[in-house]
Length: 282
Length: 281
Image: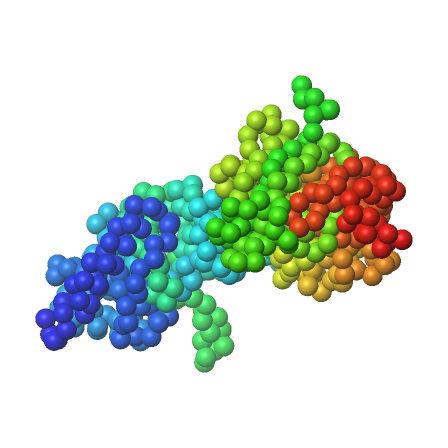
């Protein structure tokens, strides 16, 4: 412990309340459980939901990894890592396989997560029906009745306007045949990683005060029409400039000196690991 | 085999009140209340003991002044409001054995999507104004379980043609349409799942005369060609006279007269109906 705060910043009562909501969320996959979102030392919308989940779950043995849009070193990720580690004293890592608790914004790591790991995702808008139905009272009833024509309507409208489904991130998924869920703004590429995953995935929306979960080995299906199947981003013939990886989610960047486009792994931890391995092999 | 001479829709003792009532109005026969609300506690008795039947393929008119409970009947039948009391059976649903007001909300959604279509007085209630007309129609098909884009698109185009909306505007949002066009998109949407009954609530109110004629012609045509059963609510006797074969007249939440439209127009029995008919002529 390196600070005067309680272990993991939150007081024990708050942690317990958040854990209770989390347990309920795990028991009803995809269902949004309301919880009393606490004031955090970061602004709402900057990952307070995810941070509260992380802090309520963390123990002294945990090894934590925080990612922001695939990057371990962005300001947001570093600041949150500092907060978590300075109030708990746990070890931090950039290695996905080594971490027991991973908090992420907008990405699921490239390396496959395994049974003992928990992935916490930060969620800005947990309600997939919000765009068509502004009332919370109504959306709750729609969820209860499994009435998701509103979500399908959004996808249909995209097909009408652009000839294909254009949700770049946050493509709605159906969890275990009932609840339709916003998987947080992860790219479509990552949607498939949720299906039958071995790890537990938790979603925390601090501003909207909701927690939901995808427990291990849960069926998660991305919504798609029969004649317009779900398609993920493809990076055909693309190679990471740094580590040479293929078949991963990549960022498109422009080399300012030459003006040429190049590609690079979006998951920096994964990229770094590959490069280190190459060095060791040499 | 279902018996055609059986009514398709049967409503019995439909009662809807807003408020719990007080000793004054509960003890008293609500009929004795001067208007349809209690002067002491403000409870509104919007519909009281309304019973009627609708037969397959006919158009039933409902007339009455504003506040007489016409739209409340519609809201109750389309499950937009929960009824206080009463039963409603549909011949083709569980062979008319179950009271649809007591079904689960999932079943109610099913009935709404497959057995009924509704056209609201205010298109804002029936349509999603920001989405294209095509998507609005598809929404109902999706709700009924359709998951193929191409057939849905073709069906939407067919319906829009049927209600005289040029196809080049099909991808436009109804918010950009005129009132008459919005009303026609609503009709197309209501028809999309081929429901056996259509609930039309003041469809021509607020439209100018030529557009009114247009919409009424369309409704007449649909009834003639598709044999859809309809319940038409209007305060306008002209509309009722043109469309309805049978009519019920409402006052203060009660049915005061029912019969063939011509009969009611030519020989009104109740004092209020007489006033209504003579004020028209």
